[in-house]
Length: 326
Image (tube, rainbow, N blue to C red; front, side, top):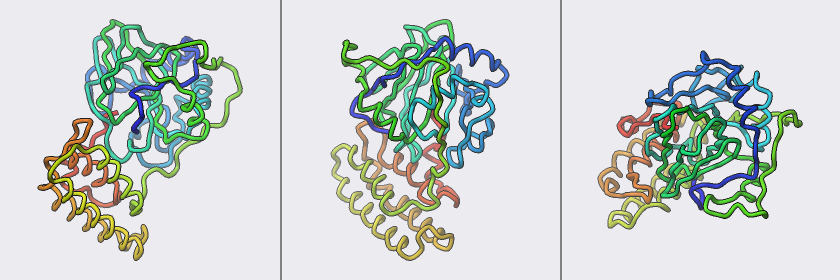
């Protein structure tokens, strides 16, 4: 999700030592390599589809894994975020390892924040995003602009462990963000995070049950395209591409009026999307976004897989690497 600043610290402070003790009690056996095999990166699933630690899918009814269910304070921490929980994990970065520079792109990331609570860390661990750099101290709570290029560097000997929560937000969460502190704002006496000690009351966790549509509505399709067009740099081909995208939305709206998200219309939606992806490629190839992504590739990743989710993925989507980079 886009933010007005690269980093925003939320006004919450947790007991990192208590969290570290809970996590250590889980043991090493539950940690697993990052699904994409990035060197030095490992994770422990806390919220997953069906509560299954082996399910790395983005879509489906989310639930607590047995690992989270056994951690009372970790559950308390997550309940105080005031969010509807999507897929969430403990993320570990070994000493002298990094999360390489990337942008979180695709339908899943358009409306989701990544909430970070550092649990085990060192002052030299650096999080870079959009030209800014911060050290997220143990027990703090941060969000950042996932649409900007970002990376993490751990140049210490010891591992870094963060709680990482994916979420579309919630009333309590947005109240917290309204009181958040931009990374470059002073930590004056007027800004004091609320300490959440172990043992305080825990609200029942709320989990995603509806997260990917069977067919994207024409209004959401238009919103996805508008977000991409808002970030594109000036280009002579922009008018042509904009016109073609407008025709796609109008055709999609007519199909929606006829079929809604009914199964009988899925082939028609897929045909229309595949045709657009093929025809817009040539004029769109030169379009570049402000975060240095190519407009065409970002569009294919955002719409090629998620506009109609239960049919085949178009070849162009595979070409642009629709992998989990989180």
